[in-house]
Image (cartoon, rainbow, N blue to C red; front, side, top):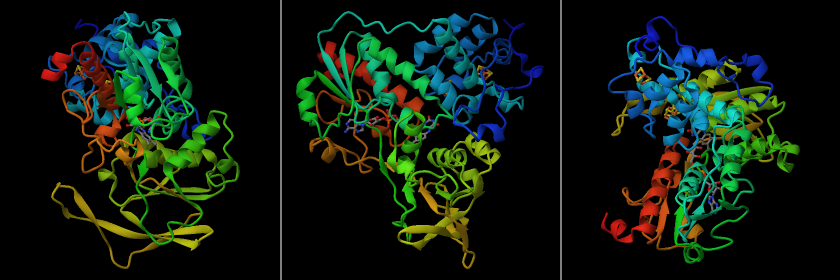
Length: 478
Ligand code: FAD
Ligand code: SF4
Ligand code: SF4
């Protein structure tokens, strides 16, 4: 093994080829090419096969990374794929969009010794894309029928991961979603230059072929109450995500030309999927030829600025009230955006949207500095007096984050207990909510988080539901 591995001192770190910024900014295709076989093996061989693999500890799914890297280096690709999919319901999706710099790769030991991390995410993506091409991704095989059914509310990654595992365990599974396509934010939030839609669609098709029933355009709370669903199924999983967008509190924020990030991204994704979107055609949700200011510093803001570039905006500026080191978005995504021509105004907060109510023309911004740390240890931004500045903007995108909707009201379920942040309260061992037989997973429990955590929660919830339905005494005793 040692001969083939531990190549980090002689082989430099390399990611798959990235398309040139100028070319990629003209379309919505993914920006990384595929690893060629030899390159994947070479990069996997850089792993030092740590006795205590911190990469694995810091992967929310605790993927067996060192072993599948070794198998990849040895050319045992199908075995490597089998091992990687054993702990991850969507390895090729995580390989594409996990912020690896904050998770597995951020803890890679050889990075600490200055050699540059193993490109774990790129190898994971390579293995599963290869598995799809080679026909190694087996159809979903339902387990022996349990004679019980589970209703899953929400077809995002948490709901899909749970549905797969429940079906494998032999349960009848119905997934309800208010959208017309399954996938949640994988389809309608995350742009296709990060995650092409056919990658998501082949996953949902596999579930449908395996007997998972999708009831789309079905909004729980409108088309049925939670109580109706509870009566229809032996257990229910809430995986509804968080969708209440935080608003911009500044004069002029109600002007035409100020739009919510998710409306903007959904419109762009729908256009990419071939749908007709009147608000895009009318220009309301289209950045072509416009001066765009995106307010916010998270992944959603990064997706908006990069979408605006691709739509042909005249200028794209991101306003964020803290500095680069303190922004919540992935460092990698900021670098991509900068390469594609986005201007970042760090330490800047919107004071007002200027222009008329029927047409925004600009943003007046206050210059900020970082003050002393608050109780959480994070430095709070403070205004610098007399340093305001103006930016031209006829499209202002609000990307300030999301909170949970009022779920007890939305689902007509007053007995559903929520935390003071509005997330659903679920037992951390069983994931059961205050309503017996109703479970919860994903962003609706954690608050806005990551796809990989949603997958983890969905898988755990499926196991907890399985235990509840097959061993009620055990589940009650837990
Ligand atoms: P969601 O994906 O939000 O799915 C919830 C589903 O429930 C939706 O389909 C919704 O239509 C449905 N639903 C809600 N209420 C009802 C109802 N009453 N009845 C029926 N259906 C309902 N994470 C990453 O790891 N990497 C990234 O690069 C990344 N980029 C992101 C970019 C954007 C723009 C956004 C907004 C988020 C991003 N995230 C990213 C976060 C990630 O998408 C979420 O953490 C993840 O999708 C949460 O999964 P979920 O299944 O809990 O919820
Ligand atoms: Fe890394 Fe995400 Fe894959 Fe885990 S799932 S190994 S965190 S890319
Ligand atoms: Fe390999 Fe890095 Fe994980 Fe160590 S931490 S096992 S070097 S990928």
